[in-house]
Image (cartoon, rainbow, N blue to C red; front, side, top):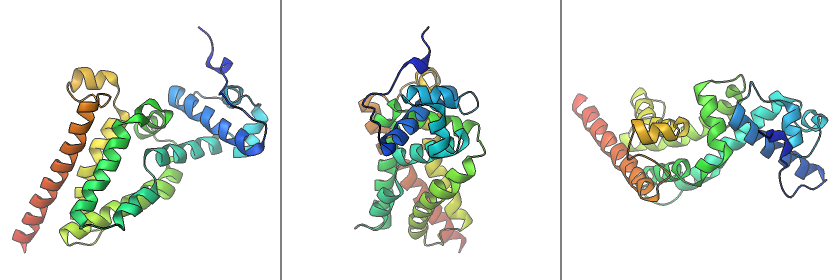
Length: 227
């Protein structure tokens, strides 16, 4: 079987910015397939049509490269800017949350499934690396704050209230399952939940929205009763 390193990404140019981008793209493919522990700078550089020294030059080594790949993978799934656009746009908090759930659900179940981004993130969720702290600080926590702020507005609570945190966990957890899930899980363990099918994708989006909103309504009702 031919080694992956014999392939080269198309459209390679010799300017520095493109070389750096080619290395990142090649690294994403290799990390998604092999994981961080089994990937090598040499293999990544060869796939990018470059040399091993370029990995050190542009990213300070394979550790720095992996950290940048993690950040890029999360951004490809959903950007902070897209979340803020919805959060600061028109509509009440419930409408905004439905829109945010739709964005995330369609990202996880749509074309992103064929890219390396979900593969890299899935591996990182199952086996966090030292670079996870970078991903947490730069991508996950800022995005989480947008979501918890909207959830807090719906419940009439601060974004860091424990009830808001629990609701945010319920809303986000299914997406983590979809990120780490593979074809066998969806076809055998969870039949009828294959996000690769267009009809299933729409049903998943609508179900997640409906389930989240019903859970928030039940939580809000329980909070009112408690007071």
